[in-house]
Length: 258
Image 1 (cartoon, rainbow, N blue to C red):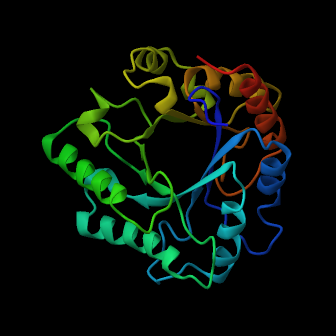
Image 2 (cartoon, helix red, strand yellow):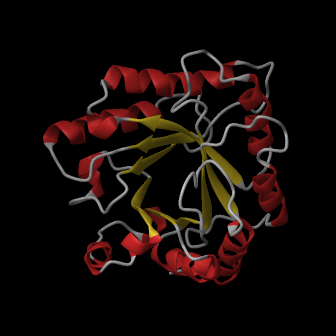
Image 3 (cartoon, rainbow, N blue to C red):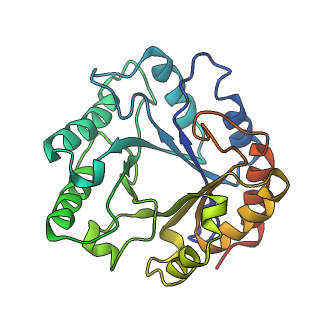
């Protein structure tokens, strides 16, 4: 199912599951496209929250996500461009890792960490910070599976990714569509060093009738994609374009990407 070329749907799920129907569009898509992989970013409270377990609604819903073989959940952590104390960042990662210790809730775990607000300009201190975060994730036994490390600078990072903690995946473009189209950004994206299979694109504000075409374009540029017509709260709801976006990624996966 994961041949290093087929695209993945990315869903930054910052949408509190008030009841079992809240995430229904996501569950429906996952079930309808079993050959498509989904990278789902779980974010209970701008991170894991301060308690050992997330709220009861997350305790109910995260195992439902993990029950699907084509889903990889990762926990959200914000590092404020490496200004957040490293000890605080590691403590949040550890709270995610400790979810799996609660054996009375099977399936309550994440398989990696989505590190938001990583810098895109190099400094030795930033490189050391991100390297330590990455090593902490990879050594956290409570995290399941691959212990995937995702960085989100939101713009093309400067220099080699190895200088920034060598993440497994990196979001090289998190922009509204009108900014994504600008020539300057397109030139920077064209000069990127990261391999296709490590790149994430998260694009919002796409005209609804163009979402499918843009999604397929993004699949050719990066393996992990999110595209929506929404211009606000696009990680906290499912827009009308959600079905066409997922269908477009599924179509791209039939042909593979290079």
